[in-house]
Amino acid sequence: MANYYISSDMIEISEFPHLAIKYSVQGVPKIIINEKFSVVGDVPELELALMILKAIEK
Amino acid sequence: MGIIKEKDREQLIKLLMPLVNKVKVIMFTQEFECDYCRVGREILDELSGLSDRILLEVHDFVKEADLAKSYGVDKIPATVLLGDRDYGIRFYGVPAGYEFTTLIEDIINISRRDTGLSEDTLKELTKIDRPVHIQVMISPT
Image (cartoon, rainbow over the protein chains, first blue to last red):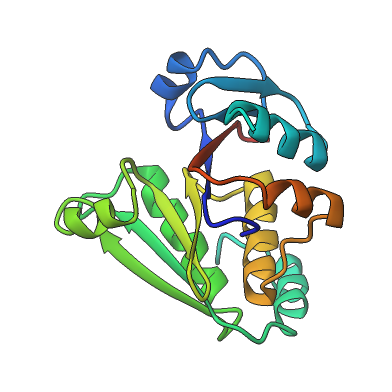
């Protein structure tokens, strides 16, 4: 909602086990940014925003 | 006997009562529904019955493949939330348990046009100038 460029999916891995394998999910929540970067666990919102900026090399 | 418990229903009605702007909830399932699709649809059906601000549309992922594609939906059960525009918010799987809480929070935020994020976070997010796709992998609780 904060930025037009951002889209976000919530994925229930037990219903999509192939995605759990694809993204090697061993713990939840696991956040994947642009297929490249990932982080496991609860991430504070500001930290996540900074991670996104890093992912797009800003 | 519904899926949403009576005491939760009352709480939800109170939570959703103040909403002004409508939120469109688009669900994709298919004719021969998988169990998850059926349960997901029933939950959303019950939820939309609790507030006239929540407008539910159910579509067929197979027969309406073009529509699904236009929303970027590539698997089901899928739930798309829309406000005055598409904010790119999608739920894949049954929105139950912890995910149900997140769904309700999202509906409230969309209706209010308020992200609920801090000023500092919003300031950082305005710097984003190219597509960012976030996937949050979660499991039932």
